[in-house]
Amino acid sequence: MNIKVLGAGCHKCKQLEKNVQTALENLNINAEVEKVTDISEIMKYNVMMTPALVIDGEVKSVGKVLSPDAIKKLIEN
Image (cartoon, rainbow, N blue to C red):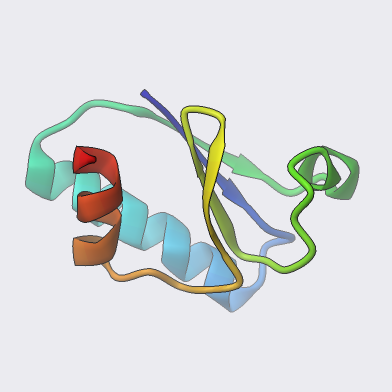
């Protein structure tokens, strides 16, 4: 599983990354988590607002800081 947090490094982006780590720990899943800050890379996902969450190449959330529980649900589905 590959998870990407898209964002320039703002507070919300950092919080989303923390929440992803918490969700993975709670699920006891080992996944590759990547922080993408390059705007041209972010634009490849057609994302206009950050933070954004991408799981296995699919954009799952845009412009929100999801809770660890909401992220767990996305990972489990």
